[in-house]
Image (tube, rainbow, N blue to C red; front, top):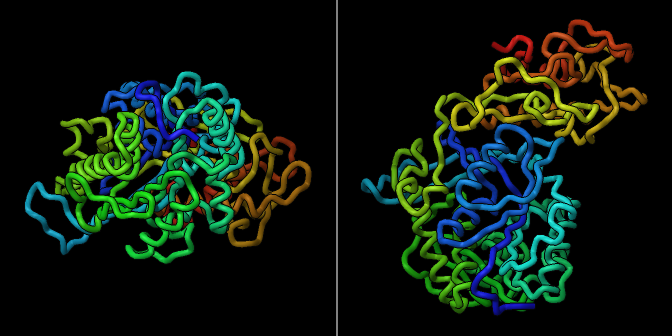
Length: 486
C-alpha cells in the first residue's frame, strides 16, 4: 500500500472508452467513458495522462482517438478488430417547474442512461496493459472494467504491478446496476483487486456505498455506509453529489461551492475523481483534496447547466478550461442511424471478417456530422466471432419473431434464442434513440432486408428478411440494405 505518491509522472487510467451520446433533445456527442472524461480534465490541468482502453475500428472509434490525442492523451492500446466502439445513450431531463434566472444552473436536471453497448471494451485483455506502469505516478481503475472476465483480469494484473512498484491505486467502482446479481460481499472482494487491503483510495458514489453496506438510498444511509466502508479500505472517499463527500466516514466540507440541487450530470463524478487525484499528487491532505474536487465538479456541473436551452448542452464549457469536455451538437440534427457493424469496418461477420461498405458511407467520417451507431445483432445475442454460419429454414425473420420459425447453424444447433435476443436489443436501441432508419447487410440471417439464404447451406438466396430486419420493420423503423443505400 502506498498513500504517499510521487508529485510527478504520467497518470494511468484504465477502463471503458465509449462514444457518449446525449439526446437533449437533439443528438450531441463527445469522447466518453469515465477514463476519457478524467483524462481530458487532468490534461487540461497540465497532467500527462495515459488511458488503457479498447476502441473499435469504426468511424466512431477513430474520431474518439483523434479527440483524445488532440487533448494530449496517450492511447497505447491497439483497437479491436471484431467489436465496434462502445456507446452509451443518455437523455437529459429537466424539471419544468425549475425556471432559474438566465445564466444560473437549473435544479432537477438529470442525465438518464437509456442504453449501453460496451462493444470493444469486452476485449481489453492482460496483453494490452502488461508493462504499462513503468515510471508512472498513479493508477486509477474504472469499476466497469471489472464487469467482464478479460478486462477484469487486465485490471487485476495492473493492480498487482502497481502495488509491487509502489504506485498509488484508486478505484471508482461505478454504479450498482452494472453488477446485477452480485451480492455486496462478492463485490467487496472484487473491488479489493486481489490486493491485501484493496486499492489505496476507494472512491465510490453514495449509491454504490449504500449498496455495498446493505443500506437503502438517502443521506443518512450514505453516512452510515461511509463509516462502514472506512473500516474495509485504507482510504475511502464517498462522493455524495451536490452534498459533497465523506472522508473516512466523516462529512467533509463542501469547498468552494455547491452544484445545483438535484442535478445529476454525466461526467461530474469523473471530473471529481480527476481533481482529487491531481490534488493528492500536489501533496494536499484528503480533506483539502476533497474540497478542491468538490469545487471543480461544481464548476463543471454549473457550466453544463448554465444555458437553460437543453439543446445547447455543454455550450458554456466550450470557451473555458473545460473545452475538451463540452458536448458537440451533431450537425445533421437527425436521429442516430443504425448500421450493421460489418459495414462499418468491424470484423463482426460470422467468418470474422468485415463486409464492403456502400459506395457512399452510411454516415460521415465524424459523429458530429451524422451520427451512426454500429450494431451486430448476433454479437448482441451472445454469439462469438467467428461463429458457424446460420440460416432460417422457413418462415423468414417474421416467422422467427412470432415463434413459427427457427434459426439453425451449419452444425445443426438451434440458435433462435440468440438471434431473437439480438433483434430485441437492436429494437431497444432504436426506441431509445428514436431511430427511423437502419442500413443493414443484405443476405444476412439477422440483417437481410430483401433476401436471405434458403436454409440448406447451399449458398443459395431467396426472398425474405433477416430476424433483426423483420423486428425493426415491426417496430416502425425503415430498413434498407447497403445495396440500396443512396
